Picture 1 (cartoon, rainbow, N blue to C red):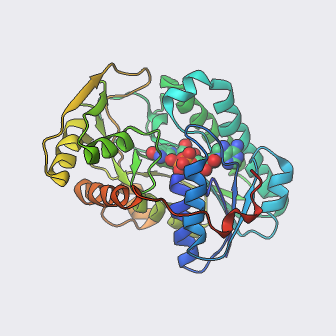
Picture 2 (cartoon, rainbow, N blue to C red):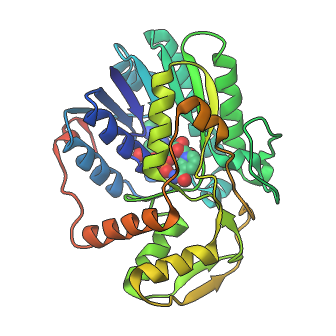
Length: 327
Ligand SMILES: NC(=O)c1ccc[n+]([C@@H]2O[C@H](COP(=O)([O-])OP(=O)(O)OC[C@H]3O[C@@H](n4cnc5c(N)ncnc54)[C@H](O)[C@@H]3O)[C@@H](O)[C@H]2O)c1
């Protein structure tokens, strides 16, 4: 199959590209190499790493640009739409841009896919649409409360756009990933700062409450869900989470065990938009997408630390995928 992966230079996107190439799919990446919410350099490295796994056509372009979509979409069987702007704090400063990229960008991809005769699109929403809740697990049909940040709001509006498109061709499937981590983790995310500090023996910068719980979900498990949603080729809505929330205190303790030291922490004030709990009910994804058991946090963190150790010297050099990219 020919699959267009928007955001294929990103953290989750590059992991998905590698898996698609491994199973023999033809892959076209459409990515703007955005400087938000972190620099473009790691995205170039992600793309070079992905390109080392098979033939890859990479188009440097914006999902809001009809010309970029017209270059990428014709002949595609399906689209994995992962391009978007993450980060709750950055969305508070750049609410209009977040709306534009996440909502208008998604509408543009869906309209472009329809025009190009693409049959199926999988879109990444976010667990943030559930809002700030004390109870869990969060089920797909629960009431949503995305008023916590412009990022969450943009994802909820994006879902509404998908619902409107899902009544016709292409079929549109939406997934809600929860607190994704693993190798190539986004440098703007707290867990990246924790891992680097743990390896350097420096204090871990903890914003807010150590009892806050996240449903940390290993990136390979998220890619399992994305590929299953892609292959199912029907509309649907699924949480992609581990279903086992863990507190920041547990994460700090596990990192300490893995590096063999008790880790000091620096406490920082909470950030607006941070929530107390995220917790996926994964039963629908297990039943309909056939997901297996989630990766244990300790196993996933060990793999993440191993990647940081290996990457500390030199990250993957630039590869052939950059040829089509214009700086
Ligand atoms: N990482 C998580 O924990 C998480 C959780 C829930 C949802 N998501 C969603 O999953 C998707 C991928 O997230 P990620 O963590 O890999 O983020 P990422 O920032 O690493 O990847 C996003 C990619 O999209 C590209 N991009 C941004 N704006 C673009 C535009 N206008 N046109 C084309 N490309 C553009 C970026 O250059 C980047 O390569 C995003 O939609 C994000 O909101 C991520």
